[in-house]
Amino acid sequence: MKEFKFILFCFSALILFSGCCTTRLERYSGKVYIPVYKDLKEIRNQFQNENPRELENPGKIYVYGSYLFINELKKGIHIIDNSNPSNPKFINFINIPGNGDIAVKGDILYADSYIDLLAIDISNPQKVKLVKRIEGIFPNPLTSDQSYLDPDKGLLVDFIVRDTVYEYVYKDCWDSFSDPVMEADGRKSSSGTQGPGSPSGIGGSMARFTIYQNYLYAVDHNNLQTFDITTPSKPMIWAKINIGWEIETIFPFKDKLFIGSTTGMFIFDNSIPWNPKQIAMFSHARGCDPVVANDSLAFVTLRTGTRCAGNQNQLDILDIKDIFRPVLIATYPMQEPAGLGIDNNVLFICDGKAGLKVFDFTKPKELKLLNWQSDFNTYDIIPLGTYAIVIGNDGLYQLDYQNPEKLILLSKISIKK
Figure 1 (cartoon, helix red, strand yellow):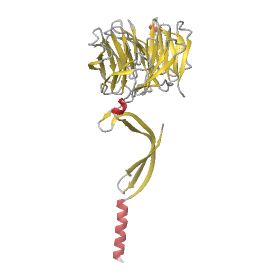
Figure 2 (cartoon, one colour):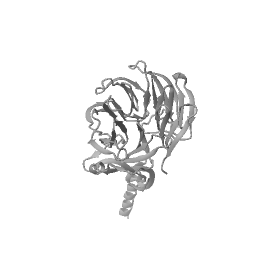
Figure 3 (cartoon, one colour):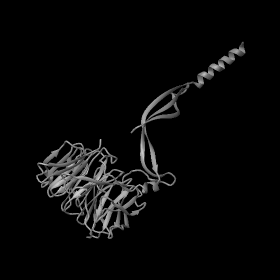
Figure 4 (cartoon, rainbow, N blue to C red):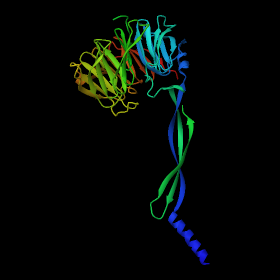
């Protein structure tokens, strides 16, 4: 009997001092990103002329002569006969995987295809020809923010996004000497699928390609790259200049290059085209940053709600009469400003869902609103003297602005539903 009592005492003590445990299950919703890779050879073999197609996910716009080029993001380029802006006609689609940017000199169109630069003969716009490919020149593809080439899997081209529920099993244990101790025993998830030479053209303010004289300039996320295009069909790699981080756009004005980044504007002297040199920088709050300029002023938009982060939606106007010392002279709040353009003293702002805003900037510290088209979404604009081409999530618009206070719609190309 004494032995039994002793065993019972020991068992009770063991429970007392060792404590006890319970388990509980908690669930958290989230997303997983599954990388999609493609074989480089397969990508490079996909270049071809195709039948004209509707706009689905338009990006950059570019004008050359009577032709309008519209990037279909990561898929290729629409070629449009725009000799009559009131009646634009689709005439070709160039299948270019990973395309995001466009520039033209003479009869040669330059386009990115993920990590490659293509030179394309467009002398017959309805049947273009690839005349040169420079492989692997863009280690950070212009259309992506991720890392890119896996030697075994191929090129990272996209992500499949899935909604996921993570399940965590926790064990809560108590002993007689301490507070509860929580341990995660394991995790599992379940997912459901979501869905001076040859003439060159004119790009929008969101462009990463531009041309000056016999040189093509391209900015990726870190670098300014130059290509000699003295012979347009044979672009040659010239130089690479590291600028910094998160480079966004490039805008040429005379012998200057204005480069926008998420943290500031860089100014390069381009009077020696093959040897551009940085001469100034203006820093600002973090945000996406396209730039346009004239002889005395630079206009910069900052926006949030993108990968650029930041907390500012605004227009900054800089005095650049002393090109080496840009000075901020005015700031105006905006909704979600992206591309912009200027013509004489008229400033156009593509303000996202807020539409197109038109200002007189004769007095930059006292902008005068001339017009506000708030019934469509805008992303970028190219003013062409009497009419402007505007691209956005709703489609492409061509607007007569000979009287900026009374814009006249010339034509609209809708997005495929």
